[in-house]
Length: 332
Ligand SMILES: [Zn+2]
Image (cartoon, rainbow, N blue to C red):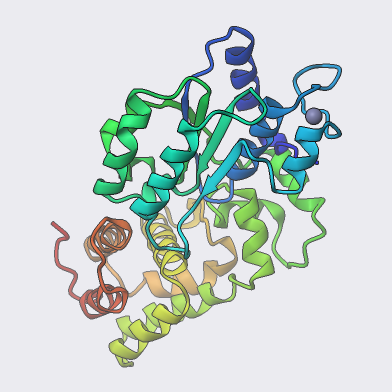
């Protein structure tokens, strides 16, 4: 049985209110950091909307009616989900056309016809334009959920036609308790894991499960080698490429932010990578603030290029970062 996560109660209440006041929009844009659980939230709500005999409180799906059974089996005819065919790739225009055709058809149950677009920001301009007309003139029973970790990458025309629901990063006790209940095998505390995940508890969990934490040590060591010029930058860039684009960019930015914090605040610095404090301290002594700030801007700029609509070569983005590390140029 699908349920929302404990940190999503506020957003759930908001949707329930809209439902009760019969002003539920035709398109919702759910935004929040990676690992906040947007997909499960949308699906839980979709299941509730399609349920034929809602539970006693009418706020939850019953879990047993024919609709709920179809939903749980992943074969509900009034639910359509699209996502990029491969991680990091774009949503294709053909997928959007299929979705439009689908929402235009009459619903099987006589209720809503729901579509969920995961990673909505992975639509390029032409694909987004194809969706626009459906957002402007939605078929009467249709309901679209657009999910995005990077809503600023969505065209304004799309954003302005959706009702936006934000999910803030969570670092509070609710998320800590939830993580602790997942019997994770890590030396790091739930609080630290949440920091490292940027406030996305599911992301925190996957960091542990996919052993994605150890590479931060290597990353700091790579930056040390680059600073001492005791390595082959091209080799480092190629090692990074193997570790995953998103992982490297996000970790790199957090490490440089920590270095800046250490530079400015020394002992009082509140670090994200608290477990790497000694290594970071070692590194910060051989870097100046201007270089750090420029490197941060440069990495951010390259990250934006990597997630933007143009298909940049990741290896060459990383090469530019490592080659520029000691003499960082301004990003713009
Ligand atoms: Zn039901």
